[in-house]
Image 1 (cartoon, helix red, strand yellow):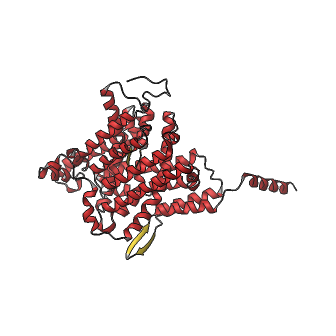
Image 2 (cartoon, rainbow, N blue to C red):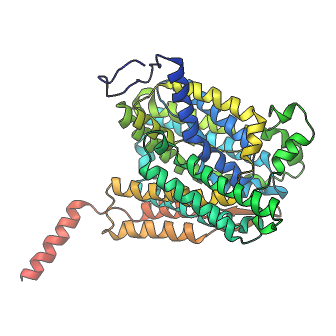
Image 3 (tube, rainbow, N blue to C red):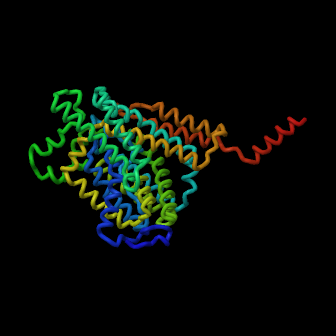
Length: 471
């Protein structure tokens, strides 16, 4: 590996490559491990295709790399921000509605492309004015905390219609091991705490299932369901080994039979507001990564190109698996810790990810991961999303001594976490505006109505009050 520490303290700069193939492979695997658990958690929660989601992450990142002229070492994968919206859209018309998800993610992609074109024409000032930190920070908190119910249901077994203390035990073990690995781990261990945590939770669940259920015939102890593996190899065929039939668009025909045009309005109201939140996350991630690699990515390759790459990747991902793509902070952390910013390394990781998604035997094993283990890890994962909103407010030094900021943040948090939705019928179909969308709309409107007081005016008021006190 060439030593380029003298240049911006990076071991490998954006356009450089490892000197040895073995190093190249290990660095690529590291990126796969960093994004893998978060990538599969979204389809695990929603019930969409895990292999297709993994493949979409690789395809989407390659699209991004192409459109950004190989100048930005970013990994894209499934976005948690759209979980609530995806759940609503996926259940339209009786459920498993991949067509509705594909349409929704295409709309998200179009929003990204439209914003990219505006940014290219007039710059970024208008975007920051529409969505200032006082709006975006609390909305990100709402996205994380709004998912807490899903994490608890998975952890306790309520998601499968029961309550099981052994479920909770496995989930809590996964949570603690994840936290310990992240906090005390060194080198690679600190980069893959979710992999280690889920591995520990799965191992405990496996031991309980094998001894309690299979050896002692104790039904309460069946934590892991091996049905996906059994079904995959019960009738041996090509798809048992190569998952060519995992993509969402293969179900469009069945979805089209239950399609109603009123679904379109529900889709728009569910996904489009969230897209503006993830655009802000996109900008934040690129500012963060730019600081790590000592480059202004908003100028070169440019915010218009990074938004275009992210948006088109999301639209393509929607047709393949139904998930939105987003920049992954885990992989930004990998670049920051290792000082390896090579886009070629990430390109190799993408190709390997696509191959991994097509390898069915590994994918059916992944599908046996019990919901309680995912739920345990999600306690931290969703908390990280909420915490990033808090971190944004702190970093931007938002002043909560101002009543204006308190009103905006309080309204967003209570409406979003409390679950305020608006429902109405269109052509006999119920249309729902999600709580995240309502919270964001409230924040934007309040930000416009409650105009910031000018510093001079404030100083004059203080001077008058002081003079009055002296008199």
